[in-house]
Image 1: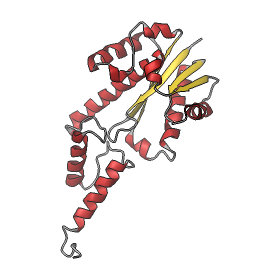
Image 2 (image 1 turned 180 degrees about the vertical axis):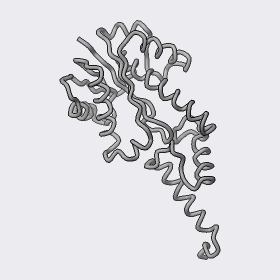
Image 3 (image 1 turned 45 degrees about the vertical axis):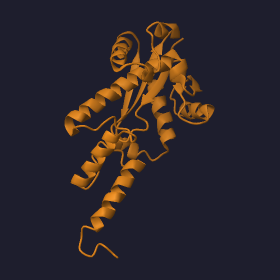
Image 4 (image 1 turned 90 degrees about the vertical axis):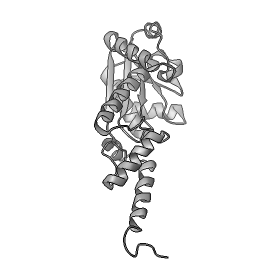
Length: 217
């Protein structure tokens, strides 16, 4: 029987792609022997090493979703996640897939993923699966490393953008300066995110007062 784990990195980021990864195995013990764990509990160097080992020894599938695709998704974020998880599962052909639930109701999220599958597979949906299931831990490592590589590539093009998350002051500063200089967000930003909408509204309001008669008092 083939089992796979699926997880993602960058779901809540305002800059850069969302990366969904899946790792398949015949026995979860084979992954556990590598010392996989939730990617957040590993150093960047250890993640890089494990990601390389996983790609060399196990079937791995990676799906990269651009900011533009996220903005034009035409569905809820959870629905996009379920559809993306299903695409990765279909590519790996497992009999059982364990997914890190993206819905407050784990069973509901599992049903969403199952509804998008093109082939039979039992979907097990769990909260914090990356902490308790080796296959999902492995997937979290691959997804995190792939997204980190994408962010480094964007930094070479755009300069210091931070981690890409709204809570990162470097990311917020980059967005503020880019919007101020270019009168709009960068192409690597998720325009539908509240962080970007607020910055744009603030910039447009400030611009009104730059014109004569803009101050209504």
